[in-house]
Image (tube, rainbow, N blue to C red; front, side, top):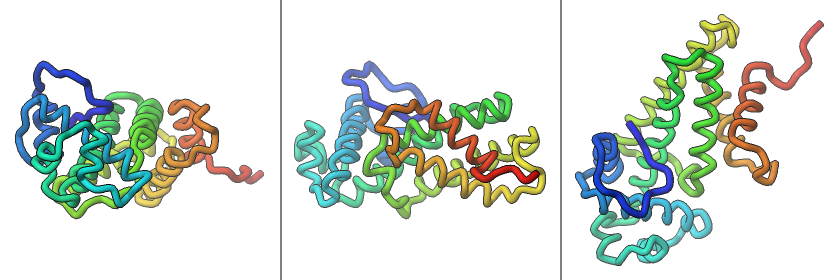
Length: 215
């Protein structure tokens, strides 16, 4: 699964990954230009709903430069737009984890890359990063894949000795999710730290905690 960041203004065509993504997010096959416009609408919705959760489809369409006919053709109801937004966000996080090459890179390198990638995605999201996952089969599938990748990553870390052998991976996963989320949504540095630096802090806290080491 491959997801997109900022949409390009022009696109000559769609590769297989783009076509698969478009079908997953929008639920139908779309042309390349419709795909780009759809992603532009999702970006606009993400920005606008953050400051005005009651924004209408018409207001979101105006922010995206889309006509009323276009917005309603792609998203007949506000609920349809929120489902697409949730699909888009979860798909991007899955892609970030897949890009970490969990089964290929050394465990410590894969952990850092996965953490950095997910933080980059979450920092790039606004309303969508606080949106409760939609009750939707595509979102559920993405969440399951997300968990599969994350558990695989932590298992490799335990096998490599980065995590103690007796650690409860479900608990470690819960702590990992919480640290990554808070690191992404809490701007305590005024945007001065890079995703790499933030990822290093998250990993240090995950693996070593904040307490003193007993004598």
